[in-house]
Length: 98
Ligand SMILES: [Zn+2]
Image (cartoon, rainbow, N blue to C red):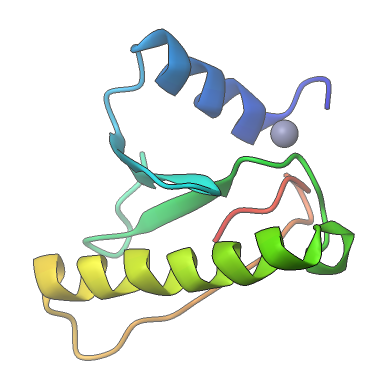
């Protein structure tokens, strides 16, 4: 997708220039969000540039959801919040990112 914020960030990870990069998973990349309005805000970028979960191959989708949960557990352990919030928004950047 042209001019995609998520694809740009993923390219930075591949190029080794994304200082917010935490870990690569099979279906995505975990990064600390640039803007920490809530301490610990983390983004899990999907490796597929798709807007909707139903556009993913079934096995990839299952793995993507599982890995999103694994990332969330890591965030919980690292930042020890009272509660985590999950969002899969895309009004501005349609490329799926939690
Ligand atoms: Zn993209």
